Amino acid sequence: MLALPKEKARAVQLRKQGKTYGEIAKQILVSKSTLSLWLRDVEVSAEFLSRIRQKKLDAVKKGWEARRKERIDRTKQITDAAREEVSKFYKQPLWLVGVTLYWAEGHKEKSWRPGALVTFTNMDENTIIIFRNWCRKYMDVSDGDFVYSLYVHATHEMRTLEIKQWWARKLSINPDSIAVYYKKHTTKHVRHNDDDNYHGVCRVRVRKSVDMNRRIASWTSEMVRSLEDKNKL
Image 1 (cartoon, helix red, strand yellow):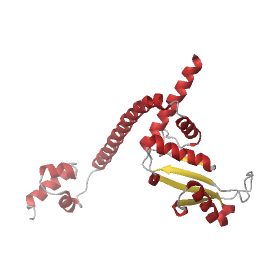
Image 2 (image 1 turned 135 degrees about the horizontal axis):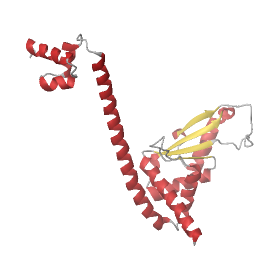
Image 3 (image 1 turned 120 degrees about the horizontal axis):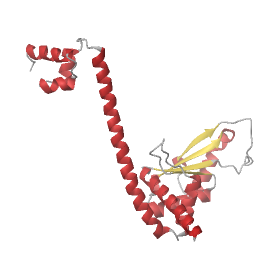
Image 4 (image 1 turned 90 degrees about the horizontal axis):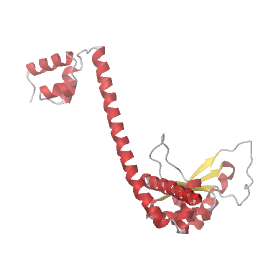
């Protein structure tokens, strides 16, 4: 059904007064798409455009602050629960080794880079195996949630298949599941493991593991605090 001419005239009047489509739609019961057709040629003031931009910025800021508060509240819940777990896990060798390894080689969340996934990088296959077993036992990570990548020096690009198969055998995974990235060659060559025993660096990432990473961070800080308390005795 077409709108009455007086409704369009009223919409034009409100637009010239500096009203947004949303504000006009509340007074005239038509869709925003209809208003867009009616008002596309209506000139608006610079003050109006400035108000619209500020309104959008305020909405973005409000949404960002809400997400930030939600993240902080969620992190606090995870932290409190993780700290209670430390007393249960503290004397278990695999837990201690895993936390220490991740503290040294794992990808941590930063204040300027929130939302980091659990990611562990190492060139030693046994260390990678320990990390996976730790994830499985203490964080219930399934094998399908591990994502594998290899970082191989460009000078070994011809050995890519061999290197992938080597890691696949060591980790008992399908070589086709391993992504490969190449490091560019530099003239300052300081590596010593550059023969056929070179197998690159393996990175293992856990899918959907942001909360898990915060849990690990809480384990680490609580472990350090416990050690400091014991040293004071």
